Image 1 (cartoon, helix red, strand yellow):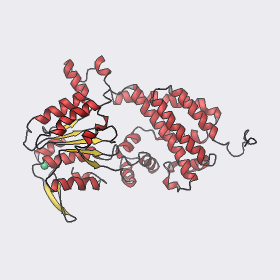
Image 2 (cartoon, rainbow, N blue to C red):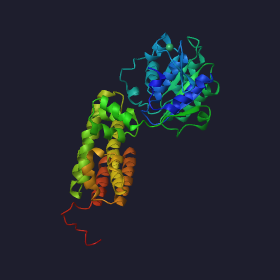
Image 3 (tube, rainbow, N blue to C red):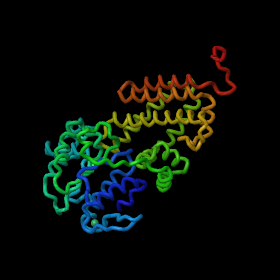
Image 4 (cartoon, rainbow, N blue to C red):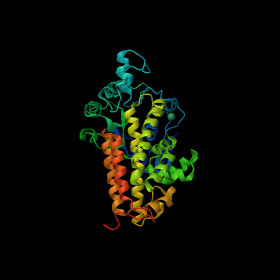
Length: 392
Ligand SMILES: [Zn+2]
């Protein structure tokens, strides 16, 4: 691998290359942008370049561009995650620290570990995995690189602990903090880091990768658009095999009547339960609440995308701009039964429902309410006489 294997993030690469060229690499970076667009890959490749024993340069567009050799012991050790001066820091390391305190292996389930969901990046992880090793002299004498995942999930005390290293970085130390968003980061942290922005990836690139992974064009197009330029998210969603769930849900929404509401809510309620059981096998440390909320968020995002497409239909946008181009004719029929104002109201109702479910309000009641409201917005299919027609 090389830093040039990071695709469609030219602005970020140019910024990093300028720092290498001027030999003024900042002590701390924040790589920020949507999840799944190559931030961590770029951080790792930049670490390889920074610590490489035989850095190479090549002339491109009138400038020298640097790259790692990808073959020296340093490059190979970073690839294998065994480099003593390359440190990956992430929130789940709290479990390892806790089990060390309890003096038992990390794979033994214990009541104390079960309660630790590691939903935030904690102060203990920053202290033990970053501040402490940062104080040590580097093993190979070329400095140390720390890559911190999900810094936006660091709570204020963890961020304050991080300031210790940010304020007085040891010589040769480079911190690369990865953030899906900048909200929640302390101004004192932000002001000590150079920001490097990563944008969404182009749709063609996502389509290409989804195709390579074996997904049909219609399905690939849907995931590429639904994931909004995040390759990581598109591949993850596709791998869950949720495409048929979305196809069926759209068919349900398009024909929704008041009589279907209870049945639809009940059928959807079964999905988060089934997914939670599956997720427990794939990620033993995930809680049922988190995995169920993942599925609810997906179902509601699909519902929201359906009504957004109806809005686009009425605003005269080409079908190629829709998310659900794979169900074009179904959408056109659904749009004929709902005006743009109702579709816009539907989008607001869906986002309110998601808020309620994520706030742990009874999901069944929320969904029944939501689908009841949505069913009321559909005018009856052509040929069926509306009881309220005379009132309007
Ligand atoms: Zn190398």
